[in-house]
Amino acid sequence: AQSVTQLDSHVSVSEGTPVLLRCNYSSSYSPSLFWYVQHPNKGLQLLLKYTSAATLVKGINGFEAEFKKSETSFHLTKPSAHMSDAAEYFCVVTINFGNEKLTFGTGTRLTIIP
Amino acid sequence: DAGVTQSPTHLIKTRGQQVTLRCSPISGHKSVSWYQQVLGQGPQFIFQYYEKEERGRGNFPDRFSARQFPNYSSELNVNALLLGDSALYLCASSPGVRGQFFGPGTRLTVL
Image (cartoon, rainbow over all chains, first blue to last red; front, side, top):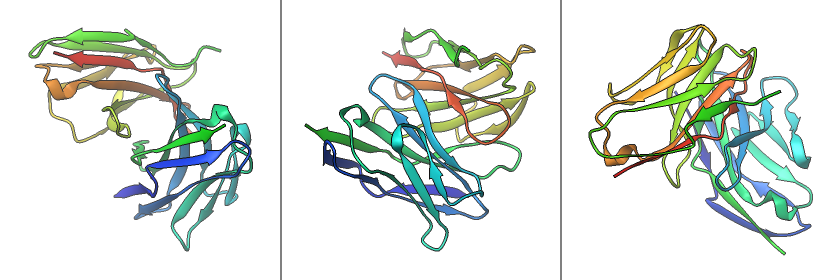
């Protein structure tokens, strides 16, 4: 079985400051991990993915995440927040054994303060 | 290239009715998955189909069913609707490597 825990339900940062969204995972097997973003009344957009290659993963819009097996973490970061980053962010885990069931965290709402 | 498309965008039904939601995957993608997202929560996995065969099923009652057609499009059916079925239903397609691409969703309201 696999699961993810997003440690903060809501994060607020000022525009131009760094963003950190925290995620811990649990998996019986080597996982694949993703971050998705959902803007209001929109579908989910894939930000980045880790699939057992490089542990530091770069995604779109300046986001990146680091896979740390020893800490079972996959935190999402961005050096400088932009107003357009305000959205709901989901950490997601899967183990690919014949199907691609994605298990989502409960989400972190990111608010950007002007 | 067109992304994943879903229809209809919004739907209002009453309890006990049946509903069919439709999804067209990205061209070339043979895998389609369905998720339910209740307001304020993360999406929950319902089904995955690959090459018209069911590859996975989440913890949903038998009132939920799905199928995939030869052109890889898919339908999700929900019978005997309950108030708790009100949610955003998301379809995702995949090219077979890890990472799924989501459509905009169908907002279902059950009255």
